[in-house]
Length: 176
Image 1 (tube, helix red, strand yellow):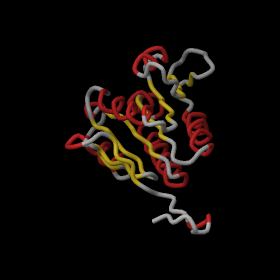
Image 2 (cartoon, helix red, strand yellow; image 1 turned 45 degrees about the vertical axis):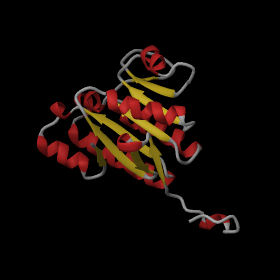
Image 3 (tube, helix red, strand yellow; image 1 turned 60 degrees about the vertical axis):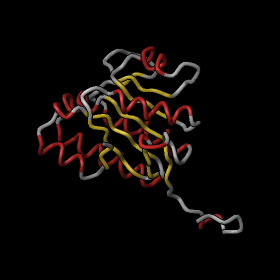
């Protein structure tokens, strides 16, 4: 592991962060992508909350209005992107996958070991098709590995067929 007298270029880039304690503890490896499979997005937002309250830099991309996101984390101000057709500074239309990728890239390259929470993958698939969405998830996975960041994708299993779910899982760990 890291020792103080190690040259800077030999500092390990990857590591693990554990959230919670006891049986409910979850371990996340930096440089990985995770899929939280659930019909409601509660677990993904609980995980995001723990990262936010632990002091991690978090970018939340969601279909939820920014005011609803802010209610979940009173006193904290995570960065967010609202997936919406409405105009706004932090809004992005779902057809703009390239711009979304650029925003995510800029966020996590600004400081390694950042956290990105993506809620709305079903909405993105609706506007972009599954093949483009899969390439986007692969791109996010590459960014996570490159920057030692964590990407968490909330996914409703009812929105995709089994083959599509299997293709998404190829590039991510599933959070049980």
